[in-house]
Length: 78
Image (cartoon, rainbow, N blue to C red; front, side):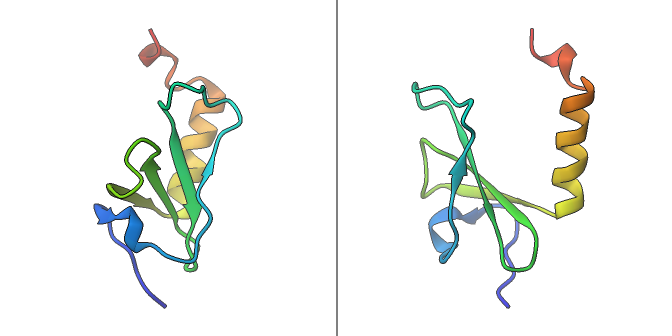
């Protein structure tokens, strides 16, 4: 199984489906995520689909989403 590390060129991650949130706006300021075969999650900038991807474990993504739901990042939204 291929392993991916942070900063890998997103276009080198093949065989995955990149998904964008339904809450994304049409101005192109979006992130896309893809589930990787090893259970981790890749994140890329939709404006630069060939650019770098950040790779997180499932636990890291879960912690981030739960933190967002709990309002942990509200101070950063201005």
